[in-house]
Image 1 (cartoon, rainbow, N blue to C red):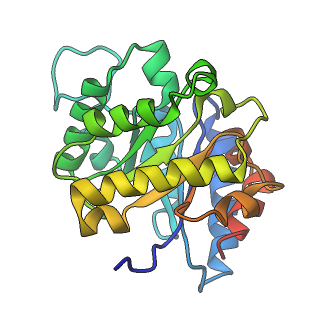
Image 2: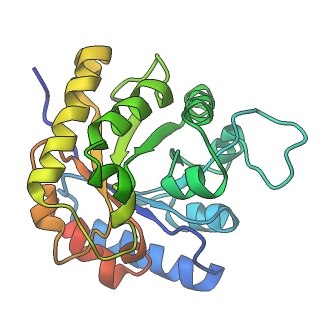
Length: 253
């Protein structure tokens, strides 16, 4: 039987944010959360790597967690421009996103590469947020569940637990477009993901957090987060300012 799953509202800043503005926004977020001590959700900000140390230092005594946007599969080595999971952990990160559709598309990351990154995250002590989702063409041709099913099978390591892994379903055609699937569509895919996780990981899969991502904003967050098997959100553009992000967080507190 599933325990009550604590929601996670995660902000992915992508390649946005400079030090002064980023620090100001994350401190404002921490201050608002401090005024809601009984808030029944976790809040995470994943800024660019250049801001990780600054933001962690700014909110290390608060309820705002800091995470990375990606990590390399190796612990160290000749990988110019990359950051290892151990380095993220050393900076105070608690989570790392792996397999985001922008990484899969722009950096040609395969499901096997995503799995290796998730394994590296687990080994370093980080919680991996593993992203899955279909393109507009795949949805049009009725291949959504086939695509997401394969991503789950290949991208997830065998040691996934409810503590070390979060799944984020992000239909690629909805990211940054203002388009969102219907609640019925979201329910179908999240139900499919939950069933797959339960079959493979048993009780751990029952209790794993499933996030929805793709043009989440204050005006649609409550509706999306009310869908069965949606345990939070992975938020892009609307996470850059507290003015836009807080209404989403409020849906869970």
